[in-house]
Image (cartoon, rainbow, N blue to C red):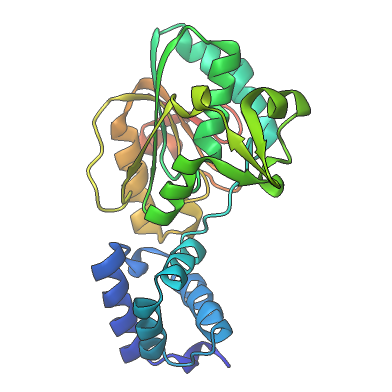
Amino acid sequence: MGESSFSEVDYRYFRKKVLERAGIDLDAYKPRQMRRRIRQLSEKMGYASLRKYWRFLEKNPSEYERFLDYITINFSEFFRDPDRFRELEGRIIPELLKKTSNLRIWSAACATGEEPYSLAIILEERYPKVSCRILATDIDEAALRKAEDGLYEEMHLRNVSLKRLNRHFTKEGDKFKIKDEIKRRVKFKKMNLLEDDFPREFFHLILCRNVIIYLEDEVKDALIAKLHAALKKDGILFLGGTEKILSPQESGFKPAGACFYQKI
């Protein structure tokens, strides 16, 4: 069954319903990629019609949450891309702390919380007395609830050393729960990066990884401009391993290492 199995009228109806209920504009994402993801999930559930699939989602909250997880790419893990986290810990954060004693960090697409908790672990170990606020946001309320629970399966912890696992987690059955001293460092909040306003010139470090790769060029450029405005001068933007700002100077940045850009 090809992409043409969904009529344009049905897709517009589905897109409108997703926008009304979830606040997610499917037009902002690369269309072929997004249609493929939606088609795969609806067909897996046995629906060739998007109207019927939407009615099914409306009647089944758990499947609706699963759908949102799927289209917003919510799988994550602690210290994802360990080399970059080592650079963050060993170079980026120490350089930022030379300029401020009140560090403000934003994990802008935090999914189920592994990224901001990884930051909190670094700060707890290396800079326990430094004043630091970590804001963690996502569009998916179900993901945020999981983040606030702080309970993770072992597959999300493959980059966590045994020493860190023993220090910062407690075992609960076959899962691991993040300890309260780490949880207290992170504030979670629902936010739509494409629609909501950002605070201006507020953050020293913003992590927005594995987001712009899925966006249409115009939407991507607009988001990068908003992230630039939210950074303080000389602040750092941390992108995903396959993401690049093609003309950083035109966007008000300069490269500051692989995946890192500094506001100029």
